[in-house]
Every structure is written in C-alpha cells, then in structure tokens.
Length: 211
Image 1 (tube, rainbow, N blue to C red):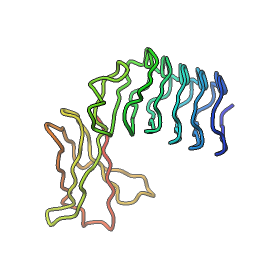
Image 2: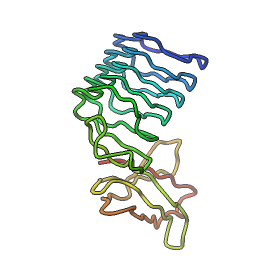
Image 3: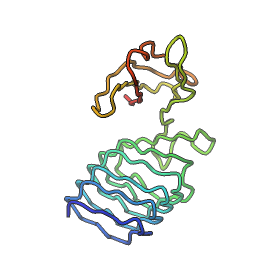
C-alpha cells in the first residue's frame, strides 16, 4: 500500500488501521477526524509526510511508533490528548510544531528514542515550559507587525533567545526559488528586520528557516 485518500466524512481512524504499511509515504488526515486510534501508523517506516486535520482531539498510544523517516509534524490546537509512545522510535523526528497550547492529557514516553525531537510553539503563555514530554522547547519563529516604510519593508521576528535562523525571500511563488537575505540570532525580545530592496520586484514573499 503506497497511497491513501481518506474521505472527509470519517470521524475516527481505528486501531492498527495502517500498521506495518511499510511503503506508505504520506497521509493527510481530514478535518472531520477527531480521533487517531492506537497503533494506527505503527511501523510505517517510509512515512515522511503527515498532515493532521484541525479537528483531531486525541492521538492514541503508539499511533506513529517506529515511523523512522518522519522528520517533522504540525500538531493543531485541537489536540488535547497524547497517548503513550505516540512518537517513540521516530529516530529522525527533529521538529514538532504546536499551533496552540500544550495538550493536557499525556501518556508516558511519548518521544522514547526520538532523541532529535525539538518542540516549537506559537502561543507564548506560561503553560509552555523549558521542556514538553521530556523534549526541549523553543518559540516557533514567526513574523509580526509587517509594514512598508521609507526605510524598507519592516517586520518583527519572534523566536527564542540565541535561536539562529535565516530569513529567505521569493519573488515568484510559482518557481519555488527562495534566496537567503539575512542570518540572525535573537538576543532579547523580538528582532526587527528591514528589507531595503522590497520595491525592486512586483512582489516579495518571506519565510524564516531555523539553523
């Protein structure tokens, strides 16, 4: 099994549904799904891309256990429960991005042997500490207060202290060609960045890449 299309009227993915589908490379979980059952993608060793719909509330135990080629995943703010060993043995998982507050119901050993995993969060609240499920946390770099001025196109970049990142620019999204324009390190508070060349192209798009 190499490809799966889930219809948008599914509300739950049951226990072991796609376990050991070793040739499955990508999965999109539709917004209708609220529960990902235990062992759902257990040992899908070639799974590299996971999109989790924004209605998922529970990710049960061992759901992505052994997905050794998975490198990053975005957790929507709807998720409030992680079962045990959800991302255990995901040995190449480096980045887990949370769009909301940390889930409150946690099983044990969620990231067992996922020793490269770092947790990034957008919502800057007291609920996020220095670690989450025994993995280090940092602010998910993002832009604030963008506006055009005489001094250039200016925006603030929010990131964790001493976090190194690169600002990249693209003039045509259809080409997918991004060029680095600045390497930065946050020392304290938001970092203001100004692009003096912003008027030299009909359009300019920006993104931030962690280093």
